[in-house]
Length: 149
Image (cartoon, rainbow, N blue to C red; front, side, top):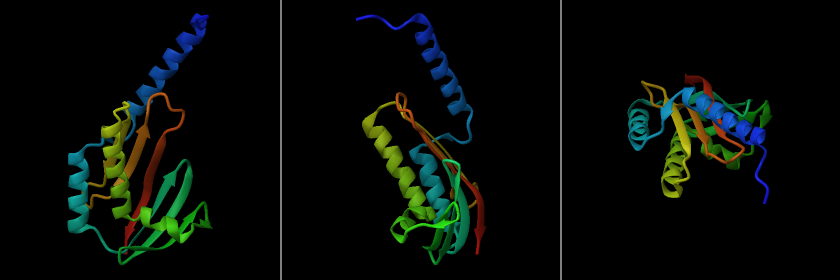
């Protein structure tokens, strides 16, 4: 079996290093059980039951309206989103998603990089990034607006 050309190998090493630098310089810090528990406690204590927010996922804005803790309307890029998706996009749903991601990363031990940022007072997730070395796609979202109602 022939080994890859040295230039291809060098390119792969440089590309990996550049990707890692961008990941480590991004928003947030490493997602931990403690940071997640703290965010969940703040949300439970101070989070409003009715709110609206915009979250950008893969460059597409999703707008979510929550009343009494339940999503009442959601759009992606201006188009309606089917109601069966809504439950994942309350703050509680997002916190559960982050908890699932953290547990999966611990169980699979594949070197996943999980970064998150939480709003300091209310505890809602403002940012999330998951990158698994060797996978071509990362998951990233950012809350760009949040309004209590």
